[in-house]
Amino acid sequence: MGAWLRDRLPEHVDVPGMLADGRFVDAGGRAVREDDPFAPHQYVWFHRDLRDEPEVTAPIHVVHRDERLVVVDKPAFLSSIPRGRHVMQSVVVRLRAELGLPELSPLHRLDRVTSGLLMLATEQRWRGPYQTLFERREVSKTYWALAPLREELELPVVVRNHIHKERGSWQAEVVPDAPVNAETLVELESEVDGRGIYRLTPRTGRTHQLRLHLAGLGIPIVDDPLYPVVRDVEVDDFRHPLQLLAGRVAFTDPVDGSAREFRSVRRLPLAGAG
Image 1: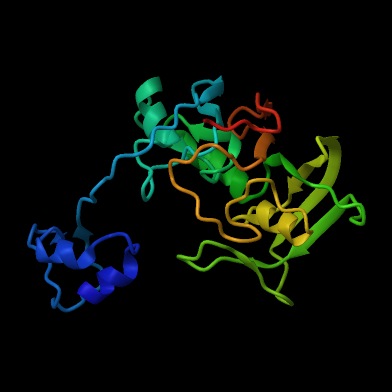
Image 2: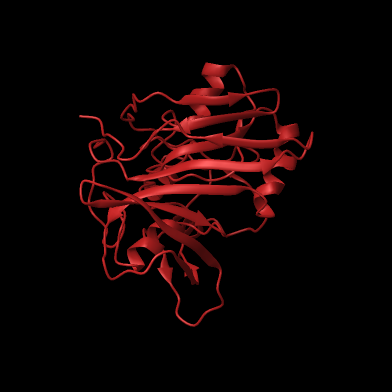
């Protein structure tokens, strides 16, 4: 069991120490030991140690709220869901308390460092119909990014390739000659201070797709901590937000059939916190 727990849990979890302290328990409450034989299909329970989390003071702007949906404009550095080192400082935990919605849950992913629109279901009963829209790619999403200009780059361009991300790896990678699973339309919309504001229309939703596609074009997004190279940025350094904005979502409501469209209140370039 010790070997299995070390393989399954992130490196920052002190598995040997927690085993020694009897902090892993089975469904009956018995402490799991290092040398216990692995048994499939059993539950192991534990409570993680939570470090003090740097507070993200930027507000979560509620763009829309009704009986079924909450749409927010998420600031950079705020996690969408409680995960890893970011628990209290997440959209879900903060808004469940602020809005009095204990079942509030996100309908899609938005990276912690990405700003912009995030849709959430107010109750579990509404989660299925709306999440199905994303699974069927029936939600139109538009992003904007601030990135360098390249005179030799012919735009608009559709980037199509195969993206793969290994569990535990910081970066995703393009797999040459593999079947296409990622597609993005890239257009130059305007210029500001010698850089371009690019309109990005993803037709798929792979992890880090937009960041990897722009880096591959030689125009990596400004202040991207992962692409083209991984930079060591402290978790409480909020000075330089990734200049990527989830700016628009549109879809046909699966419950009442109405046309829905929401837009971010933010604009590029995004300002950081001092």
